[in-house]
Length: 305
Image 1 (cartoon, rainbow, N blue to C red):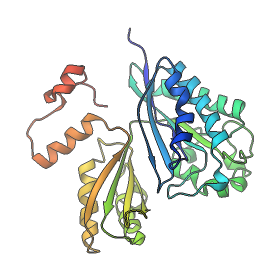
Image 2 (tube, rainbow, N blue to C red):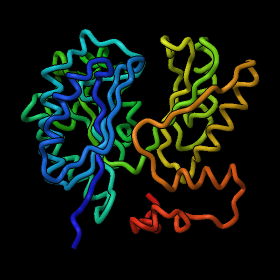
Image 3 (cartoon, rainbow, N blue to C red):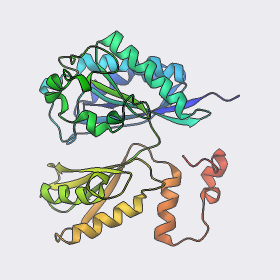
């Protein structure tokens, strides 16, 4: 039987120092059954996103080690960036890929969370499918107040961490660990430097503002480009499609006399999400993954993720 394969996409609060990121990622490169598929750093967000795939055991050991290195090298008391954050390692999600279930990922997240608290003295919150309380399913709700507000927040009875003491790590904060379905990190750039416009558009497309059910979004300033961005997470690309979000942002931008000048995907994206987008824009009839030659060669034409 083939090995269980799980994806992990840890986010680190370091988008400006490549040497620090390489040191944090060292355990991933050293692990026998872990492969680094992608990593990126964003200076404006001051955040790094690493995409890994591996067996549960090797992912567990390498992730716990990397979180410890990040805690040694990243000091949130000196950290500034556009992306909300509450920890040096901000979030550690696990996603089932092959021969693995969401339950496998939940169990893995609990083992990793317990070890992070015990070995590195960093409080851990379980989120999404791993959440122990409905109020902790949504990562944004946990992260509210960010690192600066968490010293007081963690003392409240309702915010007692799932693992660790009710006291933040002085420089590394807290971390969220959980299991979830595949997430598409998708950003759309606008030809304006007015952050209030990006914020207004983000409110229109995200679920909390009455937009798409599986979209989270916010406005971000891209100071080096003199532009702003609608930065989004699509938590279920099957039900909130990339093309729907793109067309809605274009439509909303027009009311402000603003144009979309580009978009980007952070990290990796399922082929199914791109086929879905191609179907819409090319008006293809009965086109599916089984007609993509690379999917056929890899034997993944039936894999929706």
